Amino acid sequence: MRKILLIVDGVVAQDFLKNLLKRGVLHNSYIVVSKEEWVGNFLCIEDELVFHHFDPTSASKLNSLLSREVLDAFIVMSDQAEAKAVYYILRQYSQRIAITFLGGELDVEDKNLNIITESSLIATHLIERVPNIPIIAKDIGLGGGEIMEVSVPFGSSFAYRSIGSIRQKNYKIVALYRDGRMMFAKYSIIIEPNDALLLVGDPGVLLEVYKSIKEELGQFPFPFGRNLILYCDCLKDSNVLFHSIEESLYLLKHSKAKKLYIQVLNPTYPELLHSLRKKVEEESHVEITIKYRRQPFVEILKEDYERLGGGLVLFRDHFFMQRHVRKVLLNLNIPLLRLGCGRLQDFVSSAVLISPKIRESEKISSVAFDISNQLKYSLILYDFAPDDHYHTEVTEHYESMAQIFDVGLEVKTTSMDNPIVWLIENPNILGIFPFTEEMTKRRLGPFSTNLGKLSLDFIATHKLFIPIGK
Image 1 (spheres, one colour):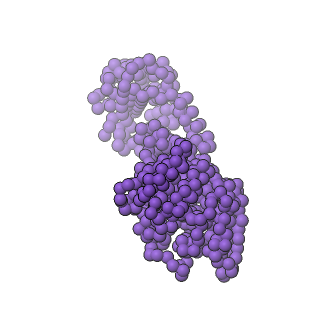
Image 2 (tube, rainbow, N blue to C red):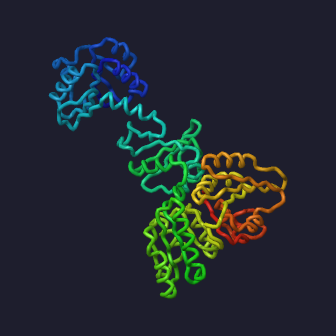
Image 3 (tube, rainbow, N blue to C red):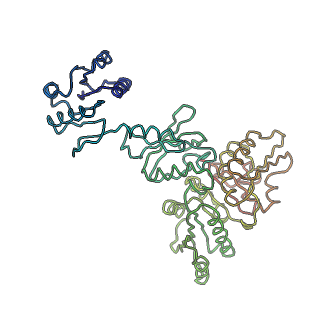
């Protein structure tokens, strides 16, 4: 057992000993010294605590208790002059004892001395009670902010996201607390409002994550990533290259994305490449790369995701129609804007079609409102129920989110009008779909019930796909 010397008196000492007994004393043995008799009565039930009643400023008496086995000492005394006298007695006896001293400053250079002031403790506890201030672990680890607890408010960019869909660089979500229970972080767990997240990582990074969690509006593409990545294939996209770039630039200017990376595949005519570079040469937040080396597209996706911090990928249909591309995108948990005809600046609304698996519609709600808010669109919730049993729970959820994001919401209910047909007839609406495991399976077809799958075959305008985890 580790032998620890406790020199105590006063009110703080009483609370200190009470908490010590609560936490258990089995792995240490304690020598307790105090001039106050109540301490002995307080500790009499514990065999591991040996009490000595005398004035600890007596050097001869205190030295008689010291030995090579005593490696730690705590001085918790109400009289600062007496506390300092005890410190000098201990330090005269040994330079190697680790001393924790409660009180004011000691004018000494001592690498084995840890001074704790009451004012700093009180300030710390007061700070922890202030709303919207991160709670940082002090009793474990380095105590420098590398362990943090953050509650998730309604409307947060983290709400209704799977843990696996959140890009975690230089930090990790290790657990979350919900309804009085702790759950270890899993790839598929969906974060809900009022959850408390336990974060571990670089203190500076955690402060930025904290701010992002608490900032309720206008975060997209975060937390998926910070940047946009546009892929253009000169062999297949030659007629729409400039349209793709214009749409990407519009999204860059109207979202919180930091940078746009344009990746040009299969380069052809030098004149075309020169025109592409000239198109973006005055854009300080745009970087264009010509990919001369032949490489499988899925490998390019994986490399760029890690290297460029992609939060949204943009490309045309022919990429997304490849099953292995869809599978890689889902595994990377990165949203996709599948570019089609039309212009984002001409759109008036976005739309979420309530999925037969209604939880999928709820999970994409924060992203749907976030992107609608940034692009100044209203949001349409399309509730198609052939049996007239409408999804009131989903509707109530979207109505609550609409108030938080201050986005106009229109709920359309119908038992007759197919939602895919409705979207085809309204080309000035951005369809937003959940990106699920089912969409990575074999080619879709007209008999599928998955709205995202059907949209690929029948909707020619832009579509946004949001991953919701495996």
